[in-house]
Image 1 (cartoon, helix red, strand yellow):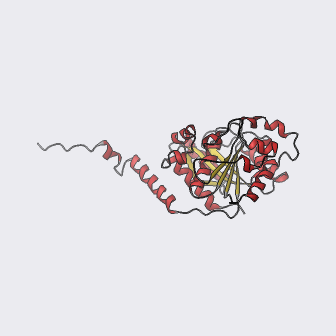
Image 2 (tube, rainbow, N blue to C red):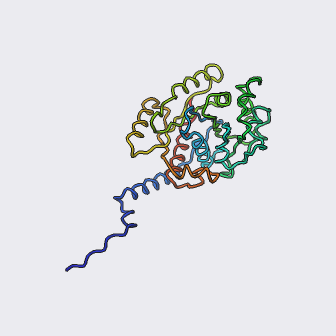
Image 3 (cartoon, one colour):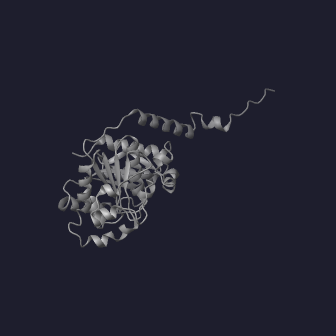
Length: 305
């Protein structure tokens, strides 16, 4: 009787080219190599994005900090302005934002120069943040009585960029999930709007209203504003729903939607609890690679004409 051949080990089977795990590893390796091979073009003038969606829980802050970190990793000088009173972007970038910290509140309300509020993030050498503190929660009320209340962030930011000894390539403004004076300040300060949309039911809910609001701001307050970028987040390719939502969004916005999509990822969710972005927390994870790809696509597309 012939001796029974030993069965291949679980490890060997896992890395057999026919297994889903092996295909995923091979795909991630290919994507990493492609990202490493290409140098990103840097814009000739600063590109200023407001990352906005009136619907909560769409990955707005996560998208802000990870795109910023991905571009900084690629060699860009990047500034994140945390305009959300929760201060989650400040936490994720590892910068100080206790109540006594000089913050974006002081910039908007007290005319403190941006240069006095800016902090360097420990994430990357060329990544900076203007943090948010708890004081920002009352800024909506205080802004009402101020002169040029919708223009205050733009004036401060433009002055800072004009006077900065080294140019910034990208600025990302993380705003609250509501249309108040803080969000209006963000729209007026920006030139481009980036909208994260989650690949889930009701994904497009409220989007038409957001676009109408952007149109009003473009008409009355900031004629240079445009929706340049839409990023699909929380994507799970195993579900029909995610694929259908992604197709619906691409059908509605064929030129604005990035090819890169951000998957649902435990690593992306874990990173902020360590005061990090997923780019530095787990560089080789699928979530990190997806944000690196999205950042590269934004850089290559360039600003809208």
